[in-house]
Image (cartoon, rainbow, N blue to C red; front, side, top):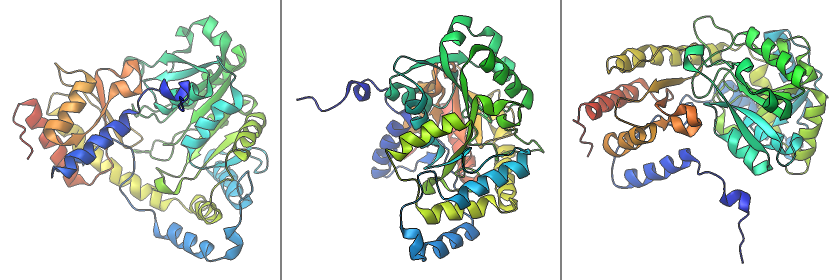
Length: 393
């Protein structure tokens, strides 16, 4: 008897997990592996958030089930955050939904609003979970290419008009994972205009919206007039407050989409542990000083690694957001070949660009979520690999 569904059997392998498995094998052999692959902050969760969790966890009233929509304190904190940072009004009751991390929310969104064989437009290169979530929901991914010479901005006029007519949903992601590209409000204005013209919804993945540098402030798509008619925005505390393992995020915007997503979630989970939601509310109600301090650390790391990579002949530039560096692979390698060589020969995990879509070929992604000395050692090993001098014991 076959116990595995066709959807799972046909799901492409998750490249991140493949590299993590190989990492364990090499470490078991005594190899020192520097992991620049997954975007998980190395900085600790701030003490004031941990202390709030402890206090709330000691109250027995918080040991019960959460509301399916998330506790009101958290939803209100999200609404207050949008008012303070973006001058966007949100109704905590109908326009905010708590998530067990934005990844979970994005995955369940596909089940909530697409039917089998519906077309969903996704960026190329883009976060690979988009494609896998669409696949598991039975819908179809349709790439729209992001060009480096256009700053990885969507070229809406270049997308086939028949595809735009068929599309049920478009996914956007700024600041971008993996390219670290940023967008101005004009990009979102154009996106909303096209979505209304062709009658499709937009989901904006804003997981890195608070990891910004050099006075750049990432806009929200909901700042566009009329955006809530057709758009939702996903947010996360994982990157901004170093709460990756806490699994807490939110979606805001269009009431109908949020209601549909809440129906899926109420049939599959019972929201997040209440003390985590209340600790997250404490974070969103803070003055964000700690976020600025963390961003300063990431910026300093970028200031160091960019010149080092440039000295290797790689055409890389500083970004204004995220803790990623998107770089072309050295001549003579595919992105996967270079990533495998870096791991096997240099003991450094990087992410091959092809993991993010066809247009990612020829590039690799580095995460700056390790201390300075490990970043410097990784670049040194990369230099030795490039010159044929690597010999990691």
